[in-house]
Length: 329
Image (cartoon, rainbow, N blue to C red; front, side, top):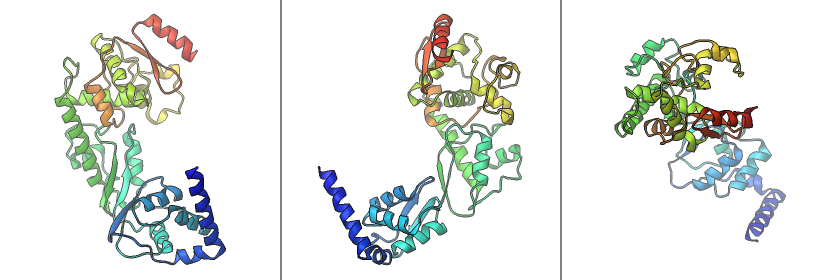
């Protein structure tokens, strides 16, 4: 009942504003922004509705619905540039829309998404208009040296996160931060690893974490997925995991994994080769690293996708084949 009353009251207010020309008046009145200066963070993918709600929460606008309505009526807020904005003087709603649409940011944002590979990171960096793309002409070996990495391959070395940077910062600085953060996360996890793991180095744990990251989108399954793969490693069984095969195909992969692809040998084909692939296949999240370092204790050796994003686990081949018949045939 209270919700209906609030909605009715809001509609009445909006109708009054429109009917009396109040919206035009509102558009030119300075907002009571407190304190000054204040910062607001426009995140990637934010639309007019979520922007308005965020501005009300931060005390920049008094009423999100009125600010949103102004944007809808004037067709504003459709081209928001993500970043951190510093508001250091009183602004009218129209001037605030101008600020967002011109992209007058004090800090820009680039996101590295869990499960991305290095090609996708490169593309994300190149798409940042305010980031100096100094890495564009560098080889992987030169870039590894520039970010202070001792490894021989860039894949998996960067931590997936949201990175803020000042306009015209070099992308090398962003990559260096992402590398150091992933390195620190990995080494911290390594210090608390479970006993008896078959990894010789933290890098091998990172490889496993990247496979776990790509195998499941269900976070609660990650430790069990890791447990299955570690069981297989201990028994000398091949991992037989599709994401490694897909990674080995590179740009030849067209979205359809065929039987011939599973039979084509590459260093990353875990159907044709035993053990771990030579490098990570993606950027693993901290949760995936933790799963690889502290896997679930399980007797499962197989799993099959249920079709809903989760898996059914089996400890023997007969049970696995029945699960395959049920969910995939």
